[in-house]
Structures are given as structure tokens and as C-alpha cells.
Image (cartoon, rainbow, N blue to C red):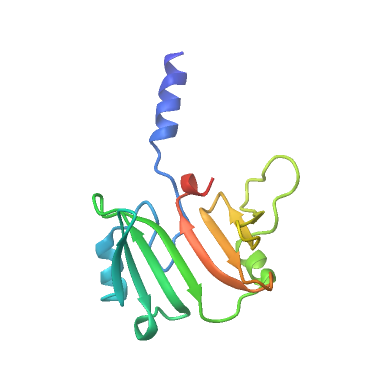
Length: 155
């Protein structure tokens, strides 16, 4: 019984892994790493008690029209990254890059997505094992944005 308790404690003590973007990983990377890697942001605002560090316009990160990093002011940890890609990215590219749809039944060991709908009926793919959500434009075929977060937050 004591061994089971110890294993349960250790299982919950492991930090939630997340899919990093450009070397910045939600739940692990700190605010200072963002500034060191990408320079001064275009805009920094506070929303719902979180600091949003945004790169857009002439400060947009290569390959994006905009990138936003949500940071907890207390811990300085990156909680979430929202990326709006510059080039057009389609569903096939997403599936080839991150994995196919999850099959019916138990989830496989490899990453796969669950097809979901937003409140305004837009399609998005949720990759729970990667802590990644990919939102599509109204056409349902091209990517609007990527949201990188911890696996725990993605469930």
C-alpha cells in the first residue's frame, strides 16, 4: 500500500509536459527567455491577471503575423503561446506534422487529435498529448492559429 501511495505522489509530482514553440515551452520557460530570444515585444498588456507579451507588425516573429505569450506575473512562467501563422497551412500539413485523428476507442501512444468545435462553430484540432490546439479559419481548411499550452490545460 505504501508503494502505491509513493507511486501516486510521484506521478502527480512530474511537471506537465507541453509542446515547445521556437524553444519556448509552456509550464517550463520563463518570461525572460521570451525577451532574450525575440527581443522587446510590440505590446505588453495585463488581462485577467496575466501578462500578455505580443509580437506583431514589424516585430512579428518570422513565419507569423502575430505571436502572444501568456505569462503568470507571480511565477514568471509561460502558461500559453498563441501563434498566428503567416503562410497558409492546411489540414494535411497539420496531420503530417503532428499526427492523424484519434481512432475510436482507447487513445494510441502516439499523438493524435480530437476534432472539436468552438462556441461559434469553428473547427479546431485538440492534441491532448502535445498540449496543442489548432484553430481553423471559417473555410475549415486553413489554419488561423496555434495554441501551445501544458498537457494538463489541454484536457
